[in-house]
Length: 344
Image (tube, rainbow, N blue to C red; front, top):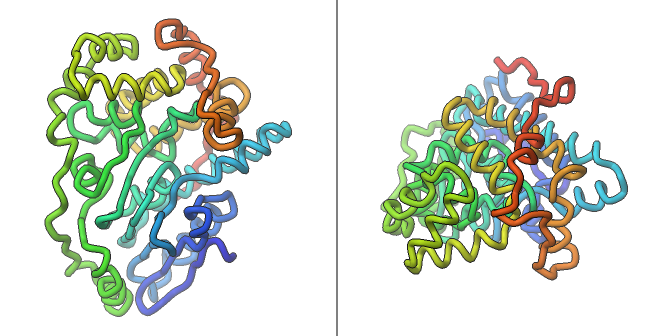
């Protein structure tokens, strides 16, 4: 298909996002095509490694095709969104568990669904233009595609901060937070790709010194605020702090969905306890399965992407968010739960 290119070149299976005008937004057919390629190459002796990259300078993949999901759900086709998420999460797990090296070159925007593809690769390369984020709380969703698993592994309580605010990470911050492994100037990516394709050997893969991590300067302050037991206490600590960082963070939090943020906080902490990607994906699916009908997903997408008024009408404030609503969104799904295939 034209939006995603899969082929074998030399010793590499290659997957290339080819939808640059749409910032390489991931659609359901694209997710299925990635999974099909991974399945085809798993036992193919001609393929020594998998290389994932993207056309265009602006984005590796700026997220899932949320607008398409919105229109389907508004028409009552909730199953289309649920099928997409289920198949996407299965594909995310396959990347993380793949028996051959997977190398991702992530330029520009790497958000949401893009993190679900590149963020689970074994070797994650970022460049000077890279901007990584999990901004789902701003559209009434949660950091899914295994995002809560990645956030849970960030130092201290940085994961809670990134999940609740959707803050963007440059290359240095992405490495600090555990969303990337190597920095390499983008002018050198072509030569490295050619080498990997020719040799199929990742043994010579080396990065260079990354730009300074901005978040390293505020890790202590992040831990002081985001170690609080719940969302209301986090807001209370930020309000009392009176620092510039606290003021800016509070401004961001007040724009996001209280339901999404409270659920994100719970999911990141569950993921930190389990330490298992599949467990995190299954937990995330509980929320996303319910989000179109019972959550604030449609209102968040309306405000951010459809009407673009940037004024979502959330049902509650942080202070009035009922605990029971979060609990209900995270209840087990029974027969609707994610069903994993056997993945040797």
